[in-house]
Every structure is written in structure tokens, then in C-alpha cells.
Image (tube, rainbow, N blue to C red; front, side, top):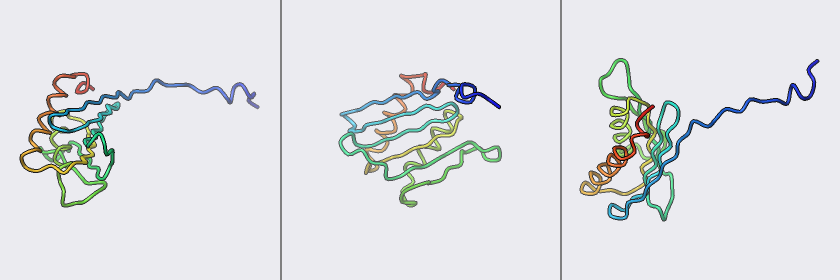
Length: 129
């Protein structure tokens, strides 16, 4: 029979999550990025009203040249988070979760995506897995 000290010993593993956040007052967005061991999570929203009203997931496929994606939560008609997740998956080669929580029009959305891509270029450690 094992003693109490033997059964209560647990191995602790280091956390592989890396956290990064940024706020852009000009584009009016707040972003939180969690880099996990083999995937990435991106939250985009308003810093004053933190909400998670939708979530999409994308990953590479062995059978398609374009990443496949799905909406996990939120309105299916709004494909913003799915499209961003697919583009990031294609760029990073890893699965990506995106929660996009802003009302963005055709003029603002390209600025938001450009700012997100700029942050990834500036912080290369977010793109290295």
C-alpha cells in the first residue's frame, strides 16, 4: 500500500501559455492574445465593455488549401471572427480561436485587421510555435 506522501506528490508542469494585450486608441480596439502550445486565441473588443458575444475556430486541413473554420458561438451570419481566424491560421499554420466583439463597418474592419497584423509583426514571439 502506498504511503500518504507518495500519493500526495504531484508533478507540476510549467504553464505554456503566453499572454499579450494591447489597446489602440486610434482604431478604438482592445486586444488580448493567448498563445498556447499549438494554438492561439485572439479577443478583439472594446476595453470599456468587455464581452464575449461570439467565438470562431479555424485550422488547416490536409484536403483544402484554405483553412476551414466554424462558428462556435454567436450569430452565424456574422463571419468576421471566422474570416479573421482563417487568415491567421493560414499565416501562422496553427489553429486559431477568434472572438470579435465589435460592430465594425467596411471602413473600420480593414484598419482593425491591419492593426492586429502590425502587432504580430512587432511581437514575433507570438508567431513562433
